[in-house]
Length: 213
Image (cartoon, rainbow, N blue to C red):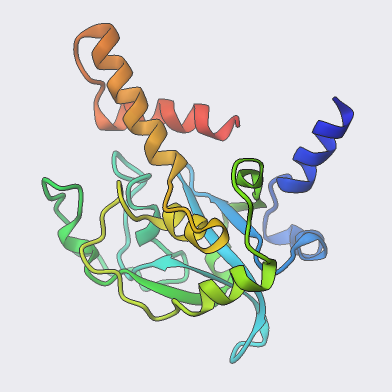
């Protein structure tokens, strides 16, 4: 029991804020996955250490210049929002296939960890190591860096969001546990009550369950 608890702690840290950066930097290793608490959803990134030209601790993640709300599709747009990005309001419509017309400028970015964090919380979260064998840390780092500046056309939250990206870098697995939870909750509500929950309600319930794991 104690061994299992120790293993969990080593895979997932507590939450940190900007004033706690010295502590999280003492724990971080290149190739670690970082989970950012955005309120109604988690944003994900790969830690790649000190990088040029900023000479500061950096992460690689999916991001866009869009400024988006935390509403119904807050979780859906996890890959489209960066605190450090320009806050330009643009229209975005959800297509029938789950992609969004306003997400055409989603790219893989190398950015400073502290810039992306902003006023939110972040934690190290490698708990999927219990499910899948991760690549060597330097391989994870290079897989992420190799994708920097890559443009993601026809962004689709169900099939390729920020969590898909980091899981692909670390494990070679295109999986998003957040979206699996949302879809599962919506399907269960239909089976039990005869009608699906609204996207917003399904996302909130799924996120509560997801974050407890």
